[in-house]
Length: 173
Length: 173
Image (cartoon, rainbow over the protein chains, first blue to last red):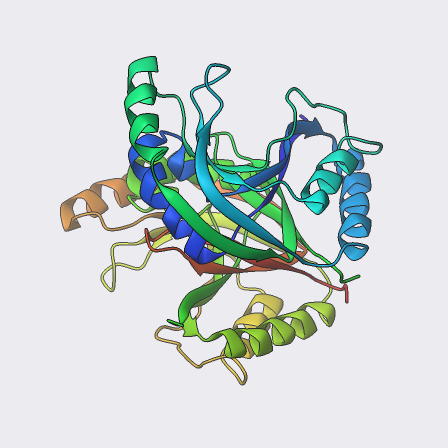
């Protein structure tokens, strides 16, 4: 069996997803591949056996962590590293903790960048487009609150889109 | 709070989703809104209180049902009722059972059509397009097997796309 590509993410509330989509549909060519999300762990490959262990580890992580509140206040950009523009989720120790744990055994350590909690709203624009779009979006201010009470393990289909494999609810066994 | 629109579906294996998507990307304008799926319960509205009861009922239904095997052997169409073409999932008592239970309290009874387990691969074509596409797809034969071990509760975003709210695993509490 070919290894499958997985990822782990939080879908914020419908209200925040709708807000993010209002930008994504204009500025993100990958808009239709997955709903708006906070990536906890970037894409990684796993065999059927590996993923069972990882599911078990996700379940333990979720069970031992109570739901927590997050806040989004502004737009930022990863430029010049990439042209990705995002809703910046304020740092939260539980987000950092989940991200850390998801790069320790039995999870593969596939970290490439420092963890910055965010919801992508624009990517793959040219330098000039990025400059224009970021120039206007950075002026927006947000005051979005949400409670994180679950995260999801997803896998990628051949066309690049993502399907949810499992939901892990925080504080439940 | 405005009621949210929910639906309940089974995502078949990645292999079957990839197969279905090879047709959907050509013949289904709603392709990008949700991964390929077997609908167990069509869209319904629910308040925050209602959905808690429904989640609890889904959890009970899942816990009391062991995983089961399904088979897909052919393509069919709902024509002339609609121009929807689909992979026909063979009838299975557990699919019928889940669908029945999801139209009894506390679920709303929003049934419009007889339950026919299927994965849509084409819809919203003109009569002529439907006729052409179905004429060629109906000649295909399939022998796809899968094990259903979970179903998912989804909600719809403003742009028409769907996000998974929760996964219910069969035979687990």
